[in-house]
Length: 462
Image 1: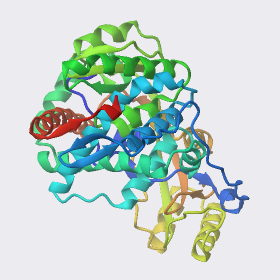
Image 2: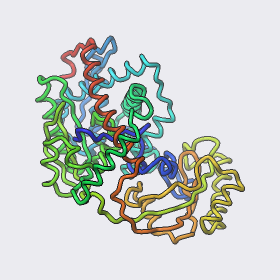
Image 3: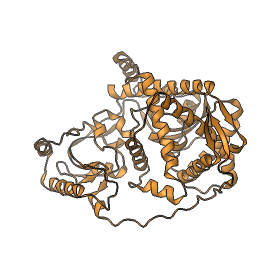
Image 4: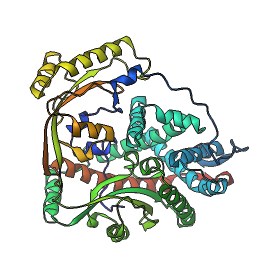
């Protein structure tokens, strides 16, 4: 776990969107699908069923905890437990799930404390932000739009269970943003100092890490946290998707990004993790690592030398044709959405080259998103199918219409060059510095909330 490298976007975004503010506009906030999806037959309805290994709790409405007057019931813990089973994708025995309950209850207590602080500050998370976070989770796990809700229903998990968790994460992000200010107190001098440090480290090893952080707020809870970490690690090593598990259980500000820490140097890591990283092969999952404040579970996603990595960099042009209402059902688009698809297909067929794309956007006053998204690093593009498209489409040829939740995009790749991509821009460095300060503030704030709170843990959560 980095001691000083938390990457918190404002608000959480996809991992590849760390490349600078202009790149953020490329995909919008939805999963790209081909234009045939709007005409595809609807999938059969999914019947709800109980999650494997999760027993119905006859005492579901018994109180498991009271947090400053807010009640957490056994039903709340059961729902989050089912979400755990779904997110790992693995059958889990009832006795293992029983051992997880104390840690899940503590996680729910922390969420209540965070939501109470957000409410005190009159912070409201709009439904659009929740929907965007769900789509981001689907993207990172290569799921089509809407598949997450269907999977939850199939596994007997109410969609509200996931929504409540995401709402607490986003609300806490806004609390921290208010506390730090929009820039997090980062100055140009701070950015320059970090860039100079990186320049002195050229040739040294960097690691691309994923992390799940399990806090231990009281030494008496350490055994529960360790059992929880062991269970999570077993599920990950059995094939559970790290981003999905991290989004659900990691108690850091990069959780909604799948626990992605980005590229970090050994001096940015806690000593225990820094000692472990050189020994880990790609895709390896660590054993539990004791770090200040809790336990870290680390995934090795890649290694490189600072300042020395060649990669493909693209320039492109895009036009975005917006929907007047969100595309909630690709099998039943509105008339305006059908007309927008027709326009997009015409543009895809007729437009050739980047100059033509710019002129089309200007003529049709398509200025809701910049036509030029800036340099795009191919290795950082998600989802994989979109990365493959940008890598293979001929220069100057328009893509077929790419449908998102709120509109349709057509793109042209202008150039595709090999460059050294292991350098950090001022925007990226600023983003890293903000993240470091936010993570430190988050831990301090949670300690304060626990110290000031009236928390009554009852027998039902153990």
